[in-house]
Amino acid sequence: MSSRISRRNFFNKTVSLSTGALLLKYMPAFGAQNKGLMPIIVTSHANKTGQNAMEAGWEILARGGTALDAIEKAANIIELDPEDTSVGYGGLPNENGIVQLDASIMDGKTYNAGAVACLENIKNPASVARVVMERTDHVLMVGQGALDFAIKWGFKEEDLLTEKARKTWLRWKENQSENDVWGPPAHLREKAKLESYWEGFPEEEFHYGTTNVLAVDMNGNISGITTTSGWSYKIPGRVGDSPIIGAGLYVDNEVGAAGATGRGEDVLKSLASYFMVLRMKDGRTPQQACEDALEMIIDKYKSIGSDYLPGEKFIAINKFGETGCATMRRREKPKMSVMTKKGYIKYEGTIARPM
Ligand code: ASP
Image (tube, rainbow, N blue to C red; front, top):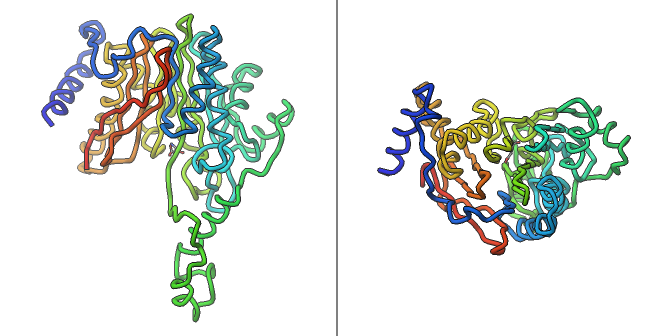
């Protein structure tokens, strides 16, 4: 508690100083155990797929490859995991049962960025975002235009809705309301409730989920990707924070990179990833930057008299190979996958408001 208060005081003090960047000293802190361990690749996914993704990205980095190639390779692995209901293939659909994907990529070395939003039928939206970045003079493409563009570049159109995601969506749809026609006939509804029709299918009423992949390569160049199927059961056409540069992702080659997962609407309003990179530029460690961003959002709600705490998780790395991870309100500490020459670790972050 006391450390939280002092951090907030520190934050309030520094943002009120226009020359704060000059006054702050670099302070090694939580996350500094990775200092000097470059190259480095991290992801917000702390499961087995996240580990596999890190190992694949690491292979590229270890042989002197670019951060850009490493993050794309790693993100593609997470996107292709059919069991993952929050990213790419197998992601939960929108309220009409259509999977719409958002993704962004940013390359610090070239100060270049690309993104796609509401992209349907393409398993690897992060790779389409990379083509937008490298082969167009645009940053963001959406919907049918993004799909047409992807097809022109040889991406294969495929059905992204897995059996698991489809059943999960149908179950949600049936449970939405007693006042619609989804579900068994009215006179059988109670009975049907007792039956285990949906047994074996996860009861995911609604959820968030996304992945961030960030890396620094041997040459000190930094790149990042954020890719997602967005909020489950979102209104068709909704675009989240993930494909918005500065919101779901930001990279500055002189500083580091940051990414967001969770309630995108709050990340959009706060441009949290850009904010985290600015905080690191001002001398904050990646861990402190993640915590600052959460406090900034909490303070915004406080300023209008609300104690609303949106569910978000932020991750960050800096050019020194330090890492950070923090979440808004949880019981368990947030984790992220980190891969360096020391091998794979699960880095444990902090909780802004422990439950
Ligand atoms: N940030 C994503 C979005 O709002 C969802 C998530 O990360 O869970 O679409």
